[in-house]
Every structure is written in structure tokens, then in C-alpha cells.
Length: 294
Image (tube, rainbow, N blue to C red; front, top):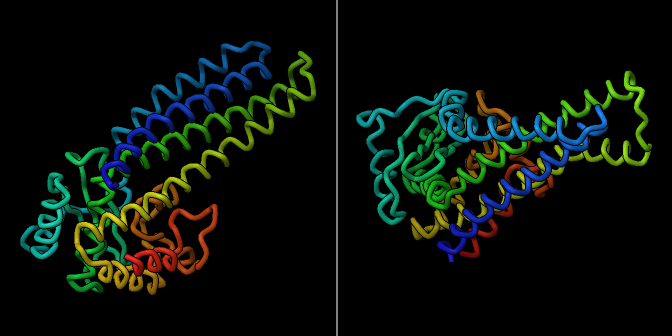
């Protein structure tokens, strides 16, 4: 079942690239027509942004996330237990041992990054290492290794990059539409103008919803995979309870990377009991409830 999920994840990656590519090119074409009366200028601009921005973000995402979070390589001597846990989990997961990082932050949390298992990295805050016992730490590490094994990081990296592209195109389009309305004598049918304007304004929101829905689904799958690796659902349940009890934000966390953490790095979202369309993670109550049934 889990191997089928991994294959589905890879297929979803390709489908998402195609879907967002169509949205970006469609927005560019509409914007170009409304601003100049020609189809190609906007399409070419959108294609250039898509072709250059997406690969750059894809290949540099891991290093950017680690740098932004303030992560540093964990010393094998100082964090001997952590290394043992990660190495032991990689055996049943059948992936190379990822690089292990530590983030100096009192808020308990963790995240994984890397576009493929051979380039994987896991990071743990000092707050997490101090507050969790070995069983709970093993469960959190298993969750993060599951993200790498299931190719979730590749999928989330691409969706983050594509959402950014859609936002850039929408911003350019809004400015161009404003200029066209004020300074262009070429008349555009009001209905066409309204449709294009609505499309430009709503496309970032639609893209964001798709990204968040994918993020929440990946968390459930990573929880299930963690239980498969550890044969213990109680450890992850207890870890999630301790994480949710913290009132501290991860200081260097960003909204763009919040979906990569095991739980929202912002305390106000961890307290929400019902999952919403705007949530990067399922509610902790729903995750614990599912784990309790395993």
C-alpha cells in the first residue's frame, strides 16, 4: 500500500507541474492580450519565469530551507543518540542515512528536506531534543524519514515553487491590467476584462489551496509510515501532544516553509482543533485520533 502511495506521489508531482504550468501560461496569455492586444508577449513572459524560476527553486530549495531555519550540522559526538536513532530507522526505510541538523530553538519541532533520498536531510530543534524521551524522538525521526522515503519533500518543494510562480505572474498581471485600463486606448470587451481579472486575482488563492491540501495529505501518510517503521503508534501520539502543548513559535520559521515541519511552527495554529482549508497541517487531534486506531 505504501509503495503504491510513493508511486502515486511521483505521478502527482508530474500532474502538478502540468496543472500549474497551464495556469501560469493561461494567466500570462490573458494578461498579454488585455495589456497589448497580443497573445504572445504575455505567454512568453510567463514561460520565461516558469522555465527559469522553477528549476532554480527546485535545486536550491534544500539549502535555502536549512539556511533560513538556522540549522547547523549535528555533532556525532554530542548527539550520539540522535545519530543512532536515525541510522537505525534508515535500515527498515531502505534509504541512505540523511544529514542530521540541529536548530537552536526552544520550541519543539522538526522538519525534513531534500528532493530525493540520496540528498535527504533532517533537522531537529534543541527544544524537541530536550523535551522528548527516546521513544518519542524515534517517532518524530521516523515521521521525517518517512517524508524523505515517500518523496514528499520533492512534491512539496515543487508545489511551493509553483505557488510562488503563480503569485509572481498574478502580481505582474494586476499591475499590467491597471496600466492597460488607465493608459491604453484599445478597447476590451467588459466581460473578457472581468473574467481575466477574476482569474488573475483568484489563481494565487487556488494554487495555495492545492498546496495546502497536498501538505495535509502528506502528513497523514508520514504518520502512517512512521508507525510502520517503529511498530509503535504511542510514541508519535505522545510526541505530538508535547509539541502541541508548547506555546513557543519556531523563531526563524517562515510561512513559505511551515508545511515542512512535523507540526505548525506557529503556536496559534497548533491550538486549532479543526482542520481548515488554510491549514498547513491536519489538526493534532485528528492525527492523534488516527494514530490511536492503528
